[in-house]
Length: 344
Figure 1 (cartoon, rainbow, N blue to C red):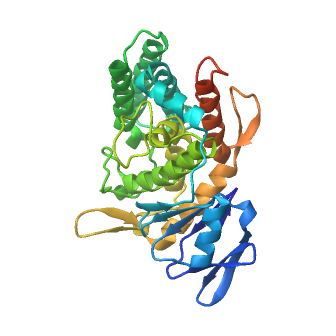
Figure 2 (cartoon, one colour):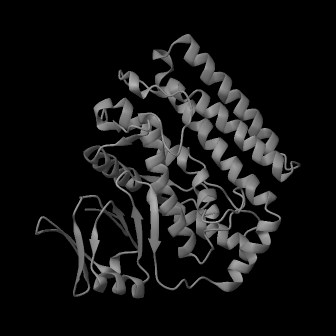
Figure 3 (tube, rainbow, N blue to C red):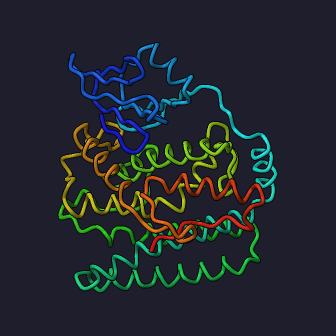
């Protein structure tokens, strides 16, 4: 069991969760492994087959504590929650804005592309002297093109389709040079492009796993301020897809997820042996490696950064909640525009 802020992650196969007074208790092999007061929780994330007592589930539903069920390899399966108490006026404003989302999408794209570019520039600054000429040239060209995209998007004259196209172009540039950021000696970590559902190499397996965790946090953040996590702006509506959670994730994943992937690989905290390949070709983390990633994820979320708009320092784990609050304030008319989160 791992706890960060108000989320508990349970990864041990065969573990069980029960209610004891006003506490959540985690047991494995008949031994108590953790105990957390219910009033300190907002969500519980379970990996694989884990038993939850009916009394605990009922108490959590009444207290507004959400259960998120993932399979053993981190794929989303279900979400269990009590009544949703979102602000109806805020949600109506959200639905109206989703019909004309251009300016919100512009902010999201500016935040995402800027943070992707910052990741590339940080690697050039820190490790450029160790890179090959090909790598340096490729990264430099990508950052220059992304700067051009940012200037074009910030001018404010583009349509929604053009904004989405700019986001897609920047993503292609970013992942096109992502392999130059990997310094592990393990050839298995070579990155040739994004693969999803399923991931086909260890690097993509790591990216997908962390994106799943970040999506959960962003969905919880949206719901915490009364927004509908299914109705986004950049992402088109699709049944079963949390479009707004994916929107909030876009500007955060280069820093929270992608840099953590690079850190785990380049510091050799994970090696090729920490992944397993199924007959279908899908690649996933082993159980022990998943625990390593979760521990690193929690530590990453504890790191503090100064919020460029609020001008206050906050843990990275709270940034999705801060951004959801800023979006809600914009939709209510308190802010003229949605301020994206820029990493510096």
